Image (cartoon, rainbow, N blue to C red; front, side, top):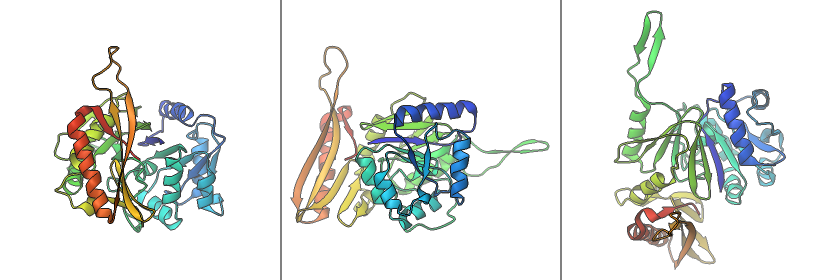
Length: 338
């Protein structure tokens, strides 16, 4: 899968130029971007604003709201761009229009996906780490689950200060770190706190940080800061190995239901096929020992476990396999999406 996630804040010429360059590199010679403006109320105005500010990087932005059949529009799109705004409104419309599974199918098939701000939020397993007010209620907080981690866009560290006539005054409200620590009191999934103008480029199971710093939050650990250019797949994968399969979390919270016959948890998928349940575990193995030139290669692997009579048995088998691979290979295994 090919995914580009942006925090937002692309409001200076330098930041717009950075985004445009990455979009050109990421999308290549596609003839148009199917733009999903659902996070804002004025869809036509949104498309105009994005084009006028150059945030389309010169690509024609084809508003999905102009299509009579949005599902067909997704299935025929050469590339997808989901814009920012209110994440609850965006996810509610994706549910209402039946677009979650079509988008998943297209992205898994190789169609590039760009999500900024709210569009970045819905790319994760849930929208639980959004900063937005719940102005409407989607049927579920479960989102596209294109990446096995959460993102907190517009992230910044420290306390908020309010400017008044006599100077700056501390606000004393919750910090972002406070809120993400609370998230991990109830959830296991790692979170990337992405600063303004930051980008995450995900290709071939690897996650590259671009444009701005980020802070990675993992349950039970101190957060770790990363600078632009860093690879985040290994710290995120390590968190998955330790947290996603934790026996302290009920199984129904470890596994997201993607449809009547499919479940996902991190690197593993459980599907019903031909009268039985099967587990798929995808991962990457690094050469052991490293070759003489010091540049070990990663090799993509997918294991199919089964058949099983019940999905629960397939889930248990997948979890045991992930734990075994982690113990056996340590840092030489990374768990990717199926």
